[in-house]
Length: 399
Image (cartoon, rainbow, N blue to C red; front, side):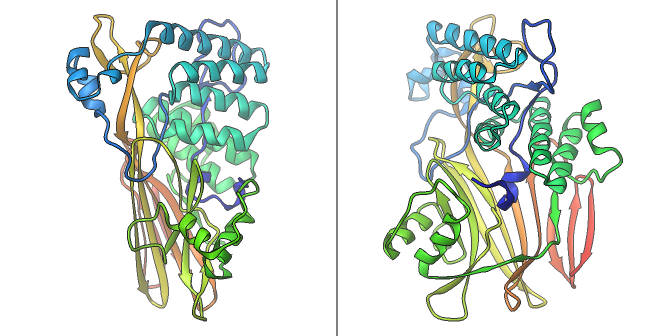
């Protein structure tokens, strides 16, 4: 999955240990703070007990939500999970990254979807130079916590990944978001007087690609996804591209991918049955059992088409066992005692495109997340100005 096309997804893939390797005397290289539980979401998934029902109650109350199996993780699984984390952290410090990945995988197998293990495994992959594989783990982990301290670590690592990919604006936005959530010397140093805006903004023109039919759209996007399966029929392509799109919106946005899928804007072409395709990723999601919501709004302003795409993926929220046996939210004091996980929702991700259909170009774009304990960001186009405001942003760009 080539990183250059990413908009929202490129902004936030990461993870950093911030010296939080447990039980080790040595400091991990650019270490990263672990993050709890997996992420997002296929459409219309079956209902599961809510995180609040599990986190606030005791095992009996959790069982009363309708799924007793959600109430507890077997002691053997807890032991295997903790052992996998410890082994993985030790291997990471020793720079034995393949061993670290294997150990963190054991922890994930013991507690499927746990973001703390996912993010630490992703960091080991990142240190090994496997950026695409690391990004998959990072994105899943990011969607699974609202803890500001953990999210600050994740966004810092998004910045590290973006730096490796020579995406300076994406890196700056990620470091800014990290600093807003939790100020650290590392994030402050990375910003070094740069804008504190928590959005990635681009005014570099991006060409729309012409395609015939949904099969043509699929082939355009397939060219940017090296591991995508080959489709050969129009019906097959339309089914694949429209399966996860909000009802009635498939002519405006399509989804591409399998377990992990990305959204892209498309527009009617000049000839019947043709499309103009933007290869800028509007957002990324995962087929997980917690559902999710997406919406797309399109308006025409001053001859430009403004597309606003928002997504709130479902996510797996971990719940842990307190010292008194109660079920409570996971934090640094109880993360070695995972009890279960339940469905919740991640923060809303937003992408805004300003498109000149006459010139067949995206003229400007911005991507950001809403929530995470920072002020809301707004992106819009009016009066010839592309504006991005809030959370340290005050951009007014003449187009």
